[in-house]
Image (cartoon, rainbow, N blue to C red; front, side, top):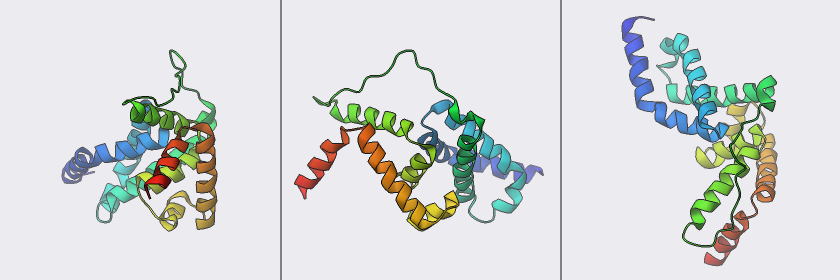
Amino acid sequence: MNADLEREFTEFVEARSHSLFRTALALTGHRQQAEDLLQTVLAKGVPHWERIRTGNPEGYLRTALYRQQTSWWRSVRRGREVSAEQVPEIAEPRDDNATVDLGLALRQALARLAPKHRAVLVLRYFEDLPDSEIAQILNCTESTVRSQHARALARLRVLCPDLAILDTKEKTSR
């Protein structure tokens, strides 16, 4: 890679890495894994920078993030566990900290979802993408996206029953 392309790639990474990292973090649920995922995708993107820079490089790299994450959870690393000093407890929201507690409970529940379910939810709610684009990114059909979405939400409701509070509040505010 010549110096101009290298400088251009470096500027792009400095400008967009925060946004790409947030997506990686949402996909993996763990900071270190998100850093590894983003670093892997950026390293794979360097040799192709001359070709991808003219189109939509951020879109290309986001798609690469989803596909790399899918590749990782299909591989042997899928069963790897993350150790914690102590098992976190999910508290019932009782006071002004209820939003924080619910956010933590939701994050824990998302971490327990299957990677493909998590990817569908991230693409739908975090990236705000339609089913057609999600299907293209995940290399599946739109009906698969819809069924994975329904299964992911059902599992999320089981893993995080505190979300029922939000459903009730939303229905009463309408």
